[in-house]
Length: 102
Image (cartoon, rainbow, N blue to C red; front, side, top):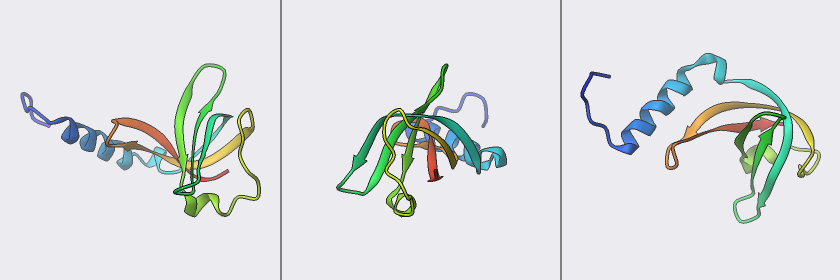
């Protein structure tokens, strides 16, 4: 990106998302942590949560198409290993974990 270019917030978030999504190390990740702030969004069927360990946390989402294959219902304080990818939710400029399996 050239020096001195003025970007809109949307352009910046889209650019950061493209950089993160090009990183092969972030396309498939396995993360171990504890579920907190779990929400089953009944209207859409999506699960929203935070995955945390002793020192850090990351926001996460598991879309209905992925969570319908789970053999258990996630809940707060549950220790899990997650398979997913890292990307940016452009609207909020927030990077998060998109869960494929747990």
